[in-house]
Image (tube, rainbow, N blue to C red; front, top):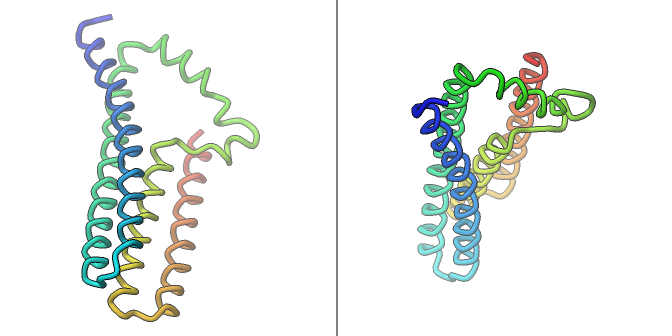
Length: 164
């Protein structure tokens, strides 16, 4: 294995660990902000906390998405010089494309991305409610966003199945 490949492998491993660690830290931060939001009585402080939560979850959402894309680019680069390894690697992961798992398996970074999108929407919901938008309107918006998100997830899964 060349020195370049060794560096790419190390970067790939670190990138994968970094994505998972950032997600874990983000979950703890979101929980702390939710607790703070619930604990505070001042409506202005609640709105500031919700805005911070929205901003933080949007940043983490974009970061996880971008890091996942970067991971794929490095993986493709490594595949060029390590075809035998990746043949075995792909064979070991082939269960994801067989039987009911073709429909049930989603890559973890994609799930984290979807989750952060929903967390961002939850913060936006709190902000809309705080701003005086009626619960009925926010409920309709939430149902529409959830249906749209589900449709996007199913379309993406269909694309994955069709490609395999």
